[in-house]
Image 1 (cartoon, rainbow, N blue to C red):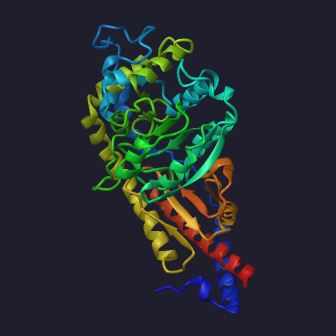
Image 2: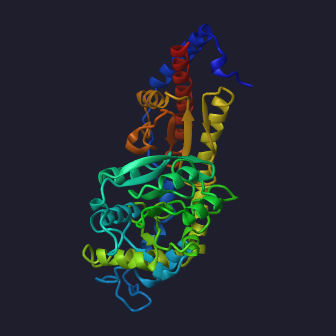
Image 3: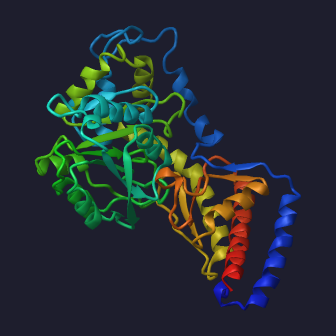
Length: 428
């Protein structure tokens, strides 16, 4: 059993620092160039979908089930068979679906922009006319969500996460402010914590009574089929719960095939109430005459249905499971019992949320970068890039091959120990 570092004397810490520094300098001499900064699929994952490119060829029928030529303009909501496929994914009706381009982030940006300039619908004032509007942000969370909100000048309020999801007592208190217009959620295998919201949290989100009638839940279900474990998490259907609670317009849900097929050439979708769908399609009519219907047709003919997607995702899981296991094993071997770090191996998603000693995250990331390993910047998992405790680091295991991942994780563990010893010496 390893001894907690905080139990060491100042003299013992100095000796440990000297030993760790020598080991660190040996890593620096290797001239490493490794990247664990973003949650990108590895090449082997991208190769799984190459047959998708051959689904349509010069002899293919390029019409949808209604006879629409997918090579031409039209069908802004998406071809019917693709709306049906996403309806299976979201557990809603096809009429609740709008199919977009390759990026769900693009759809989210557009939706926030529409709310700011024109309101959530014709019955409500634009958010930008109502004052300094605010959003609740479960933390640690997704940096790109925070970037969108910051771009539009929306004030972000941290809401701590636990193993069940956001702190709902705090959420229910904060929504008494009519300027709080929404909450941004990654409800299954959250980025970066890997947490799936409990049934109670989903029901409380549906049942809460915000002061703002135009309150929206931005439900980014990016990892809805991205399992790693053989016992995957289950997520309650938020839309169904909101319908039961009499607030069907509250959730606006997003997903894409970006980490199912090709991040640069997938298909995205919105799932929302009929009222929200009509409002979004009206605004979209000024923006585009239709998205890439050939890509929609490709995906539908390739997967056919949700079972086809799930079978495909089992192949992804087989490739990334060893990577998550390798990170967990090395961190366990190197850091367990030292009292300087904690993490949780998720059942799915793309990240591991790694917490170091308070005040050490920036130092750990800087040490890793100096030795040739790039991590997501410390603080990225919080609004404005400001982690109040300077403790959280997002680990992205999917892109590097296993041998590179092992090297990078060993260096991360070493830098975590070195930064902790430095901090303890400062406090001695």
